[in-house]
Image 1 (tube, helix red, strand yellow):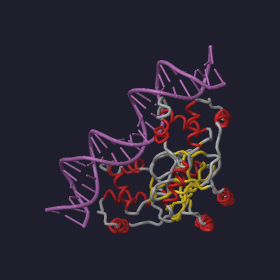
Image 2 (cartoon, chains in turn yellow, orange, blue, red):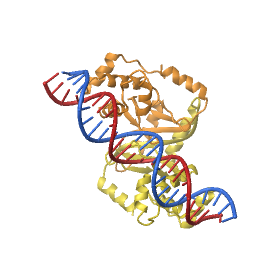
Image 3 (cartoon, protein in one colour):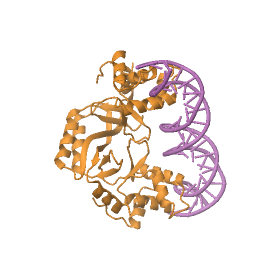
Image 4 (tube, chains in turn red, yellow, purple, green):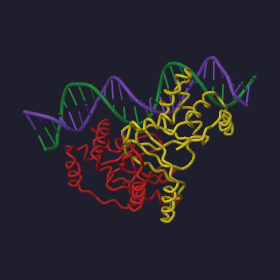
Length: 156
Length: 156
DNA sequence: ATCGATGCAAAGACTTTGCAGCCAG
DNA sequence: CTGGCTGCAAAGTCTTTGCATCGAT
């Protein structure tokens, strides 16, 4: 599964289009999220970026994740461990959750999203206005060695 | 959507079968969970029970939820709000999550579960052994007054 | 120049832990 | 009895908030 690369210009545009000021912190955090397949928490993001940007504060990471989320650039991920995690949300996708390693990996499949949404719209649930669906597929990663390789290649 | 009633004897048996001591607190908390369609957090459970059982402490609620979860009587629910919630419904089902009130309501639909599982088995995801799926449907409860009525009818 | 964004620190919310005493088995 | 469980309080973790200062537009 490959993510396309985003230039600094493109990332600036994504932020500006939402009416947010294009600050160094927002650029850095959004860029970080765009290069990740995993779904880091605020603390993980801060820990990974603070070496390169020592003045970046944890509070700013939280505030930035909030504003990027309310402007639709990120989504919160639901997760049993009770920690808020974030996901760059450019297309709808499901999550593979490994019950052994607790990793969350993207599973992009627009057909499946379509099927679920179509089914639900057809059902026409009483008194509930659907905004979206999130699917988590629980299981175990089989070929662990290979999976870890993929992971580390992505997180360089 | 109707839940079957459980007698005190049955609830005692559920606890004892797992090798846990049958204490007043565990009885009360499990009974409370069994009568709910929603998925309360530890604090909500405590708030609702403390009037009737004034000595019940919040710490005990947390510990009880932990032991009931590790013995398989409850499940943790995946939830974007970062709060740990628990679920007693042992049949597979989806959750309706209201982004306004943060309520989680069960949505039982075995056909939908079948459709999703069949689709995924057909896809035969590489290096991943599926154990199950969890679907969260995000949106807003429309007819709030009516919804609250349903709610209170269920929780008597 | 303006107003939103940042950094810092303090407060807040949620959860876990430690331990003395209690009670189910 | 006795080992597991409870209640209490303190500590821990994660997140939000308030405010002076800064910087993008």
